[in-house]
Image (spheres, one colour):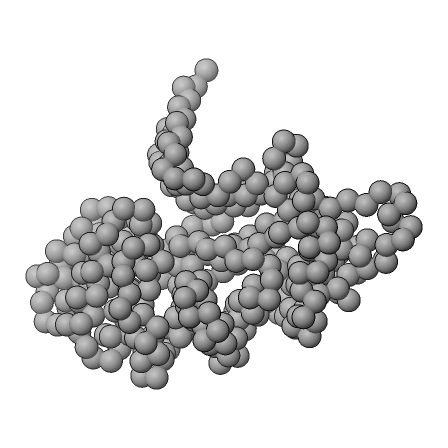
Length: 344
């Protein structure tokens, strides 16, 4: 019989560190839905507490060079009370599109996403049906297939949330950013704009994505998720001077209190570098590297790698090599570190 070991330590409400034979992992969330970062990758788990029903999605590991933001999971109702159902007599007086919506949401709870999408396609006259269909399609099939559903939801956006509220549903979705940063957004009007921006980014229509994200950032300037999405979109692809300046505006006077702040500081440093302000970029990276607690290791390696490249640009190969050696000691396969050190 094999030896097994597992221990969980609570750091804060909804935040746990798990220890097992395979290593340590970090879990965020409650019983109904959580995301776990560990040595074997990232797992999204959703279910109905007390029923034994749950669904787990394992996300493949991404290479350091992959900087895309993706919709990692759509979380259906997370408690038995919020999972919609219709009795026999209720069905007699419920419109067909609403019946399809309820059945689609139940299929999501059971983890049968393909069947859920098929049912939700019958409820597109409902704003929440169109939004949910778009989110599920985006995760299952991609941006091109999701776009018509989300555009339909945009046309009906004033009614978003009404059907959810009628059945006591509070769904959300998870956006996975580069370097292990995951944030949750509610499936509401804000979530619709974020999802549409994601779709347009995936389709290479960055200008359209920026339109939605600028609208959100201007109307909710303190919203960390909206700001991060906007900064990520601005830095995606081949940004220019205008994009760099906008990123500096969005990240001005930024503290380094959360992993989101740290990622924003990385983007700020890249914007400063893009404008030729190398010393300021170096100071920003140094600020970001001062806080290591609760920061994903991939994010810390990205910061060190960025600072190594910066040292090279500043004519300081000795410091650059020092940074690269630290990365290599932790992860010999990271990016082109081995080649830069002459070890490949």
